[in-house]
Image (cartoon, rainbow, N blue to C red; front, side, top):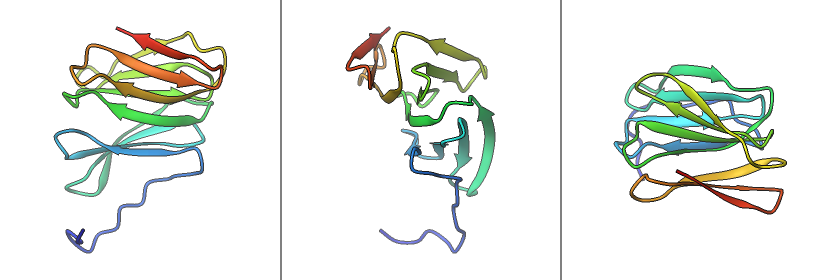
Length: 124
């Protein structure tokens, strides 16, 4: 890998954080232990929007294949879906304790989440 320019990308991260690039490659999403999810413009290395979904930590973020929907697994067990076009946040509840991971199927039809309650949930 090589440096694109001399700018430094410094998202606020902690041990419970996740950083992921969108499929088109110009956005990066991060989440932190305070429950803040941020979208960054990778071309400008600047934040686009900061969303406080807290107070539970954000454990992982993941874009769908279109790059238009962002999922966040939270310490409260709630899965947050952020529609990047409308700005709406939808909550998916089902984990009895912390949700650790979220991943979309390749076709974007399903979202899978895993939690410390020992379950993997399928959402459509």
